[in-house]
Length: 143
Ligand code: RTP
Ligand code: MG
Image (cartoon, rainbow, N blue to C red; front, side):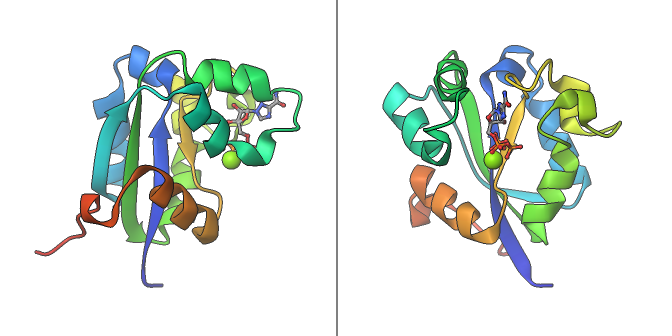
């Protein structure tokens, strides 16, 4: 499989826990390369737009409250099969169901505050990367 990109967020709960570096280490240890990265405090408008697919769900308001409760790290990860690889590193949405050793098993407290986001398909990855980064801000490997 060719190199692929995915979009990742370290959510406000994990930033507050001071585990940005620990989570980046998981990505790198799994062979994923960080090719763009920044810290942002999302506005409600940004969070609502990012999670627009969930706007009719009952948890949408709580999700937006949480995602705007503190700064997040947003990053683009590049590697073989990056979308699926990142979802495996993250674990299940509900940390109670996440496999041992996954980010959500180790760092998430609940389904509402679950430490990380990762794109669920190559198409959503492309859309989500463009939502946060210009093309010049993504710096693929050159050596
Ligand atoms: P994410 O988009 O954040 O990476 O999470 P995901 O793909 O694993 O899960 P998704 O279905 O896209 O849901 C987005 C976020 O909404 C919250 N959620 N709460 N209470 C609930 O039943 C429920 N379901 C989803 C979670 O915080 C989830 O990460
Ligand atoms: Mg999702």
